[in-house]
Image (cartoon, rainbow, N blue to C red; front, side, top):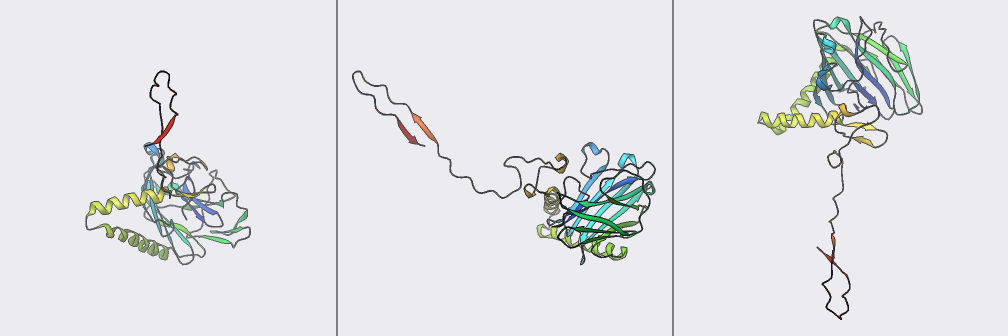
Length: 280
């Protein structure tokens, strides 16, 4: 599930709360992009969101380009296979050789467990009381000297026109992963046809569905919520607009207004009438 907050590069295995966070690193300097969100004013990178299934597993796609002016755009795609998640990164540009795909592995929301490198390109997480979760990369990791959160992290080389990535549950060959994600993308695109044949209606549905799905996240305080925007979230915090947040709400009860009607002016030598309440 793509449920962590705020990074759109994090995928979480539930209920283990084991997360693999993907971002970009620069070999020459050791710099790390950090959380992937739709950055305001395209700084430090241009992030464009693509399709995103409502369940967060069937298919997701986004691109990260021109980080710090680097002429390289990396498309990140995911799909759900027989054994688990498949994550694919495909780079294109003239400066891609200086970049790496950085994967940080760890637990979220206070979950207790261990994370260890079993072999090059193979990480195993053992959450307390639950079965283990294995992560396999499609290529051997490369050295990277950047400072990263989490006890375990891997770096995969990026090259223009080439794909790399990881899978969970079992090692998936790169060619099979590319084919499976292409099929998942085609199936996701076909869902727009229900709103055809007008391209305008299909595009409108695609835009609204993608925005809602990309903004849906998990919080240990309220469960699954759809806040205003991931770009407004900070750490474990998030922003909700009252009456403008996607969440089931019971109908409001009818409004009963009570007006206090002042009594008429009493006549001389007469007792004043009692104060009355009326419903309007």
